[in-house]
Length: 308
Image 1: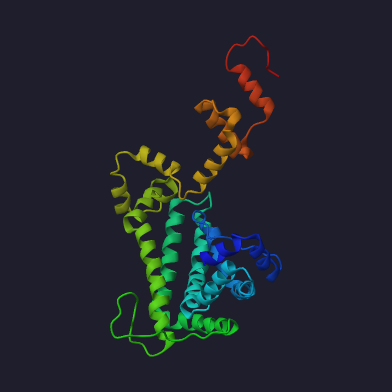
Image 2 (image 1 turned 180 degrees about the horizontal axis):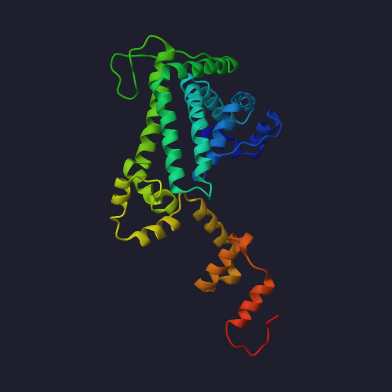
């Protein structure tokens, strides 16, 4: 998928062919850091797969051997049954992970809400994996329709008695083969990665919210007794207030720092830099200019009278 996107972006002439085929809708690359943008790229690629194939087929007729040969290779790749089914399976997974990613990027979310979102997303993915026979049937029907529009078929690949480099289950139908080798494999990888990132010990650390008064009054007596054994209660509450859920706030700080510390302020001190960044980020709570000048004038005795 990234090879197809890079193929069009590497040349203005190829990009023009793509834009003309879908009314000048741009195609975005797979972002490595912003997962929401990555989801949008995959969904957009899946939606416009037919137009991509037509654009590549048009480039295949060019006299430029470099472009035409690469377009031929990419057309052959995106028409493979395994690629079509894997793309649809990925788009199906993103229906569940996209709201989860957007929720984690929210600045107002706390640790307990994030923990609940993780558990809800994992439970939905596990249920889909458990009843893969029902869910994959719909995906396979969509893949067959998409393959028919691409003028290709979803066929059972060649099977041998001994296979070393890919899965080779002894299944009679193409639907069962791709369900086992593609659908179940993709879901198992996603669930394994989420279990690794959000382990049980990691989710248990989110219980710091239990130190809040509104949560403590709802606890049972035995649980409350165990929580009262914490010696550094005040320190734990400070960690809870300052612990970010995701990197959204950090990304905002980096962008603000890049705009604030320019070449004209290369020798700025750390205190002033921190204050300028805070003023830039929290514009909604910044006091008026008159109040800032008045406080600056009252801070110590000055030769110039600047109090308004």
